[in-house]
Length: 262
Image 1 (cartoon, rainbow, N blue to C red):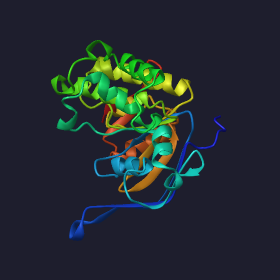
Image 2 (spheres, helix red, strand yellow):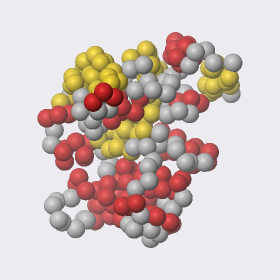
Image 3 (cartoon, helix red, strand yellow):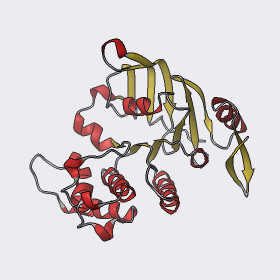
């Protein structure tokens, strides 16, 4: 059993989205504790609040309540401290501002939290960027402009930028978007390696079969945490089936858990 202090803790968490008459509460009074050195997946139906919760945990959205990163209040950390300790990979969106950058330069941006103001990258920064691009199999096209990449290639470079931070906690929102099955398998192997090295990974995924490869899952529905537990626990499987209206079934196949339609 993992006895380390939680990597992330949320207490009485609340968040709203929208403006004016369209403003609405996504969740309120939410409590959550995410284990250190494990891969946790946040899962639930569309509109459950998964991405909003992940952004709040990353400190990217205003919120009520508190978030603690390794026991320290996230709001009390400097921007540099937070950026060094917590890496973020958001949903893939078109970003024309990055199109003229080379793949290498975009990955190197992940080192900004470690670099002094206006200082050139140090050898350690270049080494981290190269390591991250090799981990995502993007090193071969490091000199290509980002604007010339396919959606899947761009996603791998954005992942490399997040990896280059070398943060103790990685938050990833739909990291498998645009990735073909072989590169999804590569991503799974990479996450496993990160966790084996002591890192903490928290991801939002729609691919339920991939969710079941994680260590733990958080089942979210309508802004409420319905269940938190190990992915290997049958109770977690029943909670997962229930939140999707029993339209899926979790079954064992060749020593792995798989999801089948009912």
